[in-house]
Image 1 (cartoon, rainbow, N blue to C red):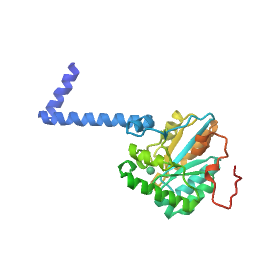
Image 2: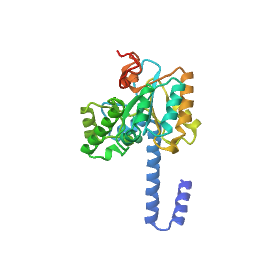
Image 3: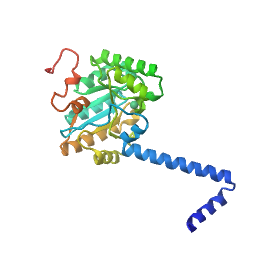
Image 4: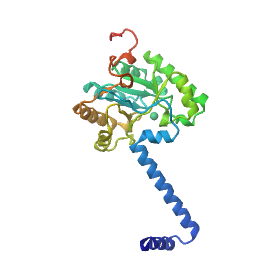
Length: 275
Ligand SMILES: [Zn+2]
């Protein structure tokens, strides 16, 4: 009690006037709330997104019977970065799912095709990564449909999964997306420092949480996010040592039975036998 009285006394001295004291108390409360929200988002993104209104049939992670995880990479394609990521994936014989932006695919259709021919899956991340939850229902539908068409024109693939920009949808938007036949995929482990300034720290963050069925969220999309390349390399090395197989989202969700390219058949001529 004495200590608290002492602190209050100090505050009263430093912030003369009750209005200022109330104001600083409010700021402390906001900062504390912000810290709690940041903590929850970082530790338990699925719970935080649930609180934000993303409910219903949304994929956060899978109940995988096999020791499989899905690595997802948002905001591409990006000249330079996407090619580097594809090289790392190839070196580790890993598959991933790229949530591409329609504007990027329109500018770089060759990179979108390289994703598909590498055996990876493409998801729909909207046209320009605007926060999906802030768009009108009509605008979001238009945004996703334009992106889907652009991806299909470039690659011959109709994306199965969509991931909303900024990671959340309003309930009406979610109903629209599901009615349109797409599946909504968020994730269970998100690296929130998109620039990955400390590769080892982010690596440890992911490895502490990974389990069979995890959906890991990484980002490309800007040159300053190049740290994702060494992170992916380290992550694939560690996951491989722990016996994890990195598969596309479709394979993770559907189980290990179909070949990894079933959802990612490149446009003809086909080089992979179909089932
Ligand atoms: Zn994004």
